[in-house]
Image (cartoon, rainbow, N blue to C red):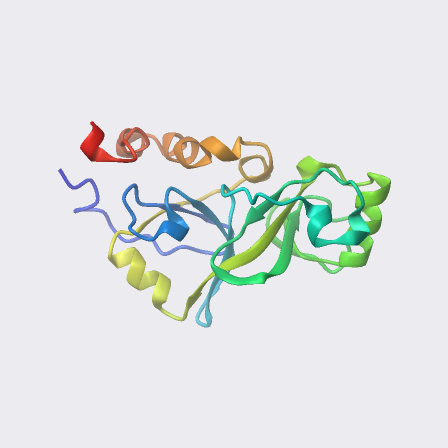
Amino acid sequence: MDFFSSDKIVEPQKGDLLISEPYLPDPNFDRTVVFLCEHDENGTFGFVLNKAANIALSELVDEVGDYPGKVFMGGPVEKDTLHFIHREPKLIESSREVVKGVYWGGDFNKLTEMTNTRAIQTEDVRFFIGYSGWASGQLMDEMRAKSWIVLKNTTPEMIFDWDNQDLWKACLQTMGGKFRLISNYPKDPRLN
């Protein structure tokens, strides 16, 4: 049974979560949740929220000392870059608000100072190696191919507080109905 066959295509917007279809063949996006920071006529940009990197932040940035914050694989594009999102607008200048309470980027020098003094808590900032990007029209082509499910009304709690290992399943369950069923699909249907 194809749960997606009669679905209307939902155009994603800045601030939405993209949830990968259960059997998306691209290993970069296997059961991932992508937070969209930009989506317009020029293309789409975001970060995978639920793929932890096996590296400490201090191995990437000397200035952070022993700050225990996690690093995530933001996506397959420009894996030699480091990005961050946070929920501390008063502490980090020149950030862009993506959705209410969630900010992208800002003054990195101020951020490293805050990590060293513990003025920002690990649960209030996320670091990403690389990002996920789509050229103009590319994401909509993937939407028509039923590669992604869009979750609207993203909250800071979904991004910063929900367990990243279960985020894919939790997002689908939040949507209810057929999406709750999809959340229980086995990773490998041959083992069912």
